[in-house]
Image 1 (cartoon, protein in one colour):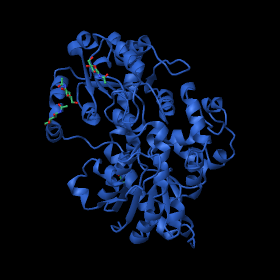
Image 2 (image 1 turned 45 degrees about the vertical axis):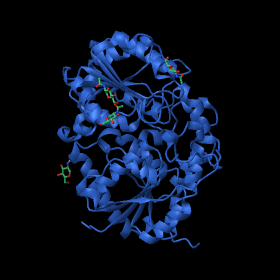
Image 3 (image 1 turned 120 degrees about the vertical axis):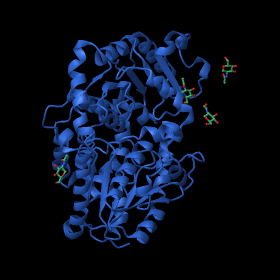
Image 4 (image 1 turned 90 degrees about the horizontal axis):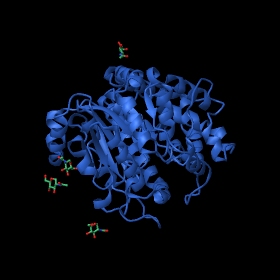
Length: 472
Ligand SMILES: *[C@@H]1O[C@H](CO)[C@@H](O)[C@H](O)[C@H]1NC(C)=O
Ligand SMILES: *[C@@H]1O[C@H](CO)[C@@H](O)[C@H](O)[C@H]1NC(C)=O
Ligand SMILES: *[C@@H]1O[C@H](CO)[C@@H](O)[C@H](O)[C@H]1NC(C)=O
Ligand SMILES: *[C@@H]1O[C@H](CO)[C@@H](O)[C@H](O)[C@H]1NC(C)=O
């Protein structure tokens, strides 16, 4: 195999994008590909450490983020910003185009792998005759729902109701569509330009039209039907890169690293296998105080042990974060951990049996890697679509919601009890457990990386996959 490929990898500045792009980079490096992983200085600092054996093949390239009016100093990723201000980060990100072009010119890689926010990458790469690949942090089902570029350009879905129905171009049985409480925001994001002058729909359309091919975090064995559909919708190669599952954790070495966390793990050690519920909503979303309280009462009612990685809502005093007396009533049965939590290490603990979570694509992959039972409580972005996909596949249960997205404590408790131990939930538990044979099958996912590496070679030999060199 050719060991000298150079690939630039450039994710959007959200951890839900940077982490899978980094995981993908590690897999390329493990196949002797030289990766140049590009981000801003503060984001590079915040990335997990790269394993020693791969470090020499992963070059972390820092490009300073241009300052932009409206973007607070030191805000370099979406977690540093409230949702309304993310558009200013996009603006700064767009202004990196010049420095990015210089970098491409210096490295002259075999391929540039990018994200759809930087929809200008195909044009930049084409100046040097270099192919570009859009790597989707979203599932194939999400991309299929969003549709082909022509659809995005036709402005045919302009009402929020349009996002609540399965589109006619999905030819097989599916319920993948947005829940009512997410539809308004999504309709706005897809159609309405922000301060950058572009909408998300336009960025995705430009990306899909411009890229040489599409890489998707999926596999034949799990969501092949959606991957094949994308190939038809896009009329260009769509290559699954596997699910990018985590590598097995070496407990003896990682646990000691987070000194403050060892007591929490000792707490988990005292519980019987698969008895504890993990509660977590990812790095981007902060529950409102009302949601925190309703969820807390629901956990109390469900009457099972849980560990909750809780982010404090903005402007809320820790002393009244949880309902009055909650901590005393749950005593030894529940553990609430404020702030950052080592999610993967928690999911890896044998005491964990299920998760109530936001159904982010990355968290779904991590949970099913361990075959955990899934209780789905989507909040934002692609989460509502992922939740439907899990329900369609008989793997998870979505908590009942009102039209505005609110949920009751009884709905929370009922869903948890059904999925975790009620007789009715047995088929869901069996199916989630079976998913390990796909999600934790390292050889299967390594094969996807190997096939992709072969494809890079193919690409170099196939003129029609290379962009026409564009003059300045
Ligand atoms: C975590 O542990 C470090 C020392 O290991 C200590 O300085 C810090 O205050 C601890 N933080 C918390 C939140 O307990
Ligand atoms: C759990 O970890 C947090 C650090 O996030 C620490 O502050 C807390 O004391 C730990 N709780 C227990 C019961 O060990
Ligand atoms: C938080 O609550 C404590 C105790 O109730 C109080 O002393 C403190 O002033 C409060 N802080 C804020 C920012 O409200
Ligand atoms: C991976 O590929 C090898 C070589 O083609 C094949 O023998 C093996 O069965 C594949 N493994 C999986 C899990 O697909």
